[in-house]
Length: 89
Image (cartoon, rainbow, N blue to C red):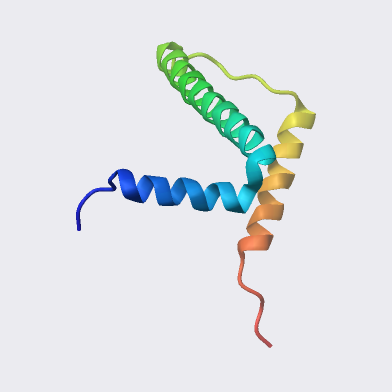
């Protein structure tokens, strides 16, 4: 089991060309490039957010309104009901 060589890559490219056609292939390549760029950007943003969160003061008070707290608790209760096994009769 060796690595993929030139003949295998040519066969793969021919199959892709036959499947997608010559008109859709550039669009497909462009969308793959954009998706890759967005993924890398998201990964970098996530790292920046992690570093920012690590620098924040752990003793800093977190404030939220009563409505935000009620909404969060209702969401958790709904999730707990959804995750709970059904009662047996």
